[in-house]
Length: 406
Image (cartoon, rainbow, N blue to C red; front, side, top):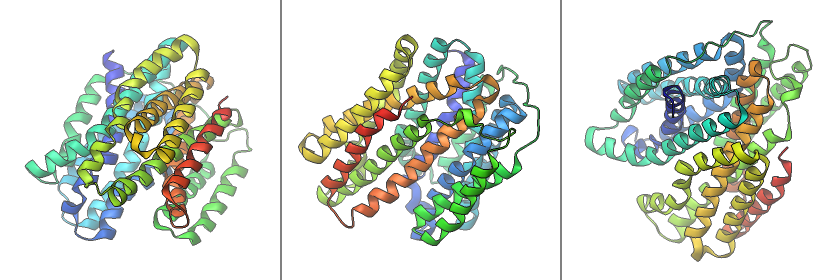
């Protein structure tokens, strides 16, 4: 792995680490449940809302500049977060961290596309990039627990600073990408931010009245994208974006449902629940590297379809044979780590170099939106039916969705 790829991957590692490292420290951060929810959700909401815009900025102002801005902002905001003196201050800083995280994702994808112009080399590089992000998700709860118990909650933010600076040093040789000339699509960017943030808020807080401004903003975005200089060119819109949303819909929704199942039905403790998920999370830390090599040899279609089918099989097995949870979760983990790198390679590979940032931003925005929808919809279904029925429905959706891949 080159120094540049290591630096770009560490940037995404930081983003994923920060989504989970806070979870186990929430009781130490605030005794108020509402504050705990917003310390966690504030980051997720702004991260989802700014992904599409971050992709546009990456293409418009240069991926290298946007990536470095994101890294330095992430380090500075993490340092200030460690010095927080109140829950509202920490919530506001977490929201700004979400914006900084959004800057890192499409810009790193764009730089990988420039540094690895050959499709086979690019597929392998994206496999490494995805594998390190999986490591961040796995390491988050464990590292958060160790740091909080040993040094206090402030340590979970301080740890970001040296990692961000190391990523900056490793990626210092990132290639310069020329800014995209032309007018900035402010209408498209503003309407996308409003639509995604209000949708996320409505689903997270069950504030259904917020769906009205979200729908209106989405309509404005769609109309604004008909212009020739639109932020999201029509040629980048494909069924692969919907496939990406469904992958995360299934993953996040099933994780939410199974968390309740393990703790409320099987009586597991939170730490035991985390250990129960290891068969799922461990494959996401190494299998994307294999996926990248496989995509480099045979293309993204077969690995992506196989990933959807494995996710479906794992979810259905969990629904109908819960005694085989270890096998079911392993199938789900291998499926996710086949599908997501394949989708990334397909979407970035089909976009021209000058639009790689917005292509990556669009895919990750659809994935993040799918994750929020998965938790909200599958969680709501639990109030009217049983866990096996909900899991069976999610498994069927994943099986059908393999035909979406283009």
